[in-house]
Image (cartoon, helix red, strand yellow):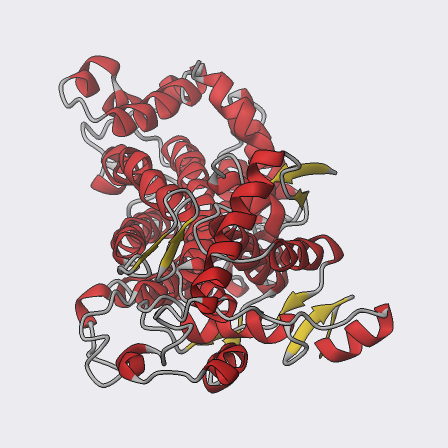
Length: 513
């Protein structure tokens, strides 16, 4: 297993996803310079406490209680009260992959050295990731400022021996894990509860996972579009290079180039329809999928900048030895990225829904059987093929579209009006996750329907290499429908294994190189 060093160099979205999927372990830097930087921040805080300096969240209460001074003999108890009163999260728990992504995202921020935390805290977070002892984090309860306080309290709680963790496939009390391993719970230093909780790790981690899934959706929808152009005897000239040179959106041009390359076969000229212009769901596919492709640059920039930021408050400057009070916990960039992403992805779901409507309707599918049934003529009256699948795709698409209302515009004033303008970034990220799941279900259905249509037109032996590879990937899970049968499990298997489509990425990129 590869080792990802967290602390000295920026992480990428792919780094977070790899750690989340247990494809990489993590380690802290071994350099003296990094260790000294971390230690200086912790020592500076100790010195301020000795000098009776006033530090928000260390010698004062939190939020609107910042005017309440904490007596010196109670300072060490304050982090425990913070994590305990925030233990009110509800809703579905984040799954193990997402919770691991949250943990490495928080580690990345704290290991930058501007949060005043100790080596011991960073080492315990690293241990949790490598031993796969991961806090169970409820998904609901954050308004995205002051960061993801409530969900992140479950990391802090696990560190001090409270709350539950995922361990060896089970949810167990973390105290039992510590006892089994002969370990002591961590004792948080005065600012460490705030440093752990006052940040954007949950929304950013979810954003990293959403971004990679969105890439797979764009890839699959382009492959599906190519198959459907063939099955519907569409017009490949809609993706002409000169045509797309006249509208210079690079991502849109890349999608058109993929379609142009993958449709470059004798089969389609032999079977091409006499229809001069295809319906928009074929002809305009690059314009729809291309919106995401062209947005990837700024989406990545927003997400990775947030990932590699110090986003708690106050920050502790270990170089100039200053306490910096600010608002870096505000998740506005992630909120904007996720609100935008969910619209882009829902539009792709809608595109796929419209393509399936063409495939199943004998009035517009250029000779395919009704509802894509593969039944023999004798059995045809009994069989209904993909009729119900098309209804389900319509339902999933409608729900995805319904989820696209921007979360960031629903800012609430909370915490005695101290948090009077908040980002809603975590809700935006969760909304985007739901849209992605629904769209993956739509994509799974289209994978099956498109491969079925290709076989019904007897085109499966003459596909371009990339489309043949995509068809093979689908057929690992799906069998052609001859007689009606439930498709639930095959569809769910495709959704569950959707990340495996990444195996085709290098081949797909090479095909248009």
